[in-house]
Length: 198
Image 1 (cartoon, rainbow, N blue to C red):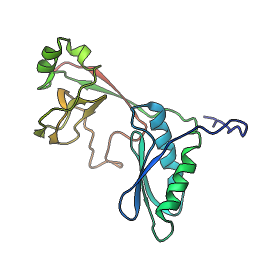
Image 2: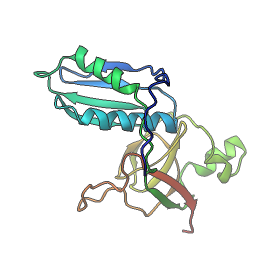
Image 3: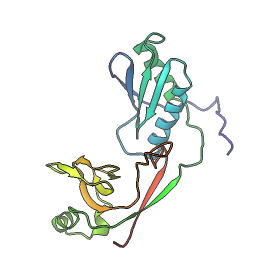
């Protein structure tokens, strides 16, 4: 796909980057706090640009932030922070969207009926809502549990403690230890949930 050429006449976008140190050889660069596709695209592009630097050991994009591990013998906190701020103003390249994963969900989670009853809505409407995390997290959530908290829906890849509201389950395995990479999802991938029969 053709890349968008930069236009020198167009002003660079204003990007506020909050940079926090993480020890002596890493920083967290936060591009924002909201859930936004454009922020995620910018975080992925920033991580890709940082990985090209010789003084950067690793750059890992999250939804709207990038964790950067750097070589402190080659660059200081101040210098890497300046580089991050400069790179963050670049317009992300136009790329193909990530792979689309269609995830079947059996909506029968432990919290589904209780939350729907309290809010007096249907399960179909519930999955569109913003809900806070549970007041008391569970000590064990099974692998494949589909849960919601805040503005996000997630899948527990492995059995673990968790504080999200359980609304369903899926048979799709996210952690594939014999694959390379071992995760089904990659940065930039998209997920669409659909109701399935038990």
